[in-house]
Image (cartoon, rainbow, N blue to C red):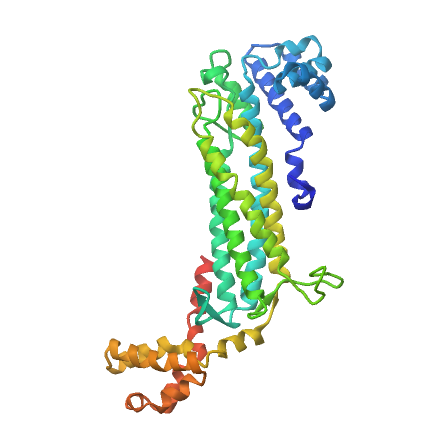
Length: 431
């Protein structure tokens, strides 16, 4: 995590203070449950809540000697609680604290990411409806294909991020489990009701079966979903970068007064935010493979996953949070150039209507093979030499046998490509 690509709401979740606060709450809630079960005195549980304090510098100092972070924390906690501290961590193991804390952190991070997705979806919906009928060229392989609308382009991305939202909701549920089951997960020294109590208090579900640790397939699924969301961010960012190319210039990132695009070339207006998003997406996806490899651990547990999660947990969620907000800002302020879109639509002399000609000829009785050959012949002439495709269609004697001039002109009406836009929008925004 670096401040340049971080937002405070998300970084707070991963701060040392937040982590140790969650540790304390888990231990204190467990003591409440133990007291209800008669394992420890009620007065001890009360004292732990009232006197329990931690000092991060002191924990770090103790850890230098113990080489164990949870023991360092418990030792520091005991310094403030006194003799009643002997009842803390009864029957528990370090993984009970560490894994349940990670679940809390990832759950809270998920809530922020879901808010981010909701904001992005809202912006995409607004801009899609704004440009519902703004004609633009659709491209396949980077080459002009057929007309579409800029609103349809954005609606496609809206649907993609709506799927991502549903994936993240499922991933949040997958990761929101609590394990307070003791060494090797058998509850040999702690009652399962303690786990149930802590889970409820921390807003989690009980892990059905743990092996001292929460199964890492849950985490693998979670980080995989973050990777998919990152890829969707890059998908939209790449579209913006292409549309901003000088030769295309159909859309452009907002360029503020006083902003500079290049230290050498004062004229430059670069898609730096979208390029930045492409890079950030790579970082989030970099967490996926390590998370998948964390699934396979030795026997009931090892700690090969621990160092990985201490890094990818904060890094992936903080980076994705920043990226989603940056993307929402880009879309919200994106400058659209409808006139340039129309200019690009007209740049190939109308050959983008070749399929309409092909289908119309087959409907009139010409074989598809003959129709394709005829339509492509004139399309390649315009492609190579320029000119107007409709004019060439009108001059062909074979075509004249099938169509009047008015009929031909109707085949070149770009509005034909918009006749189902309403249906598309209804599918995307009303289902």
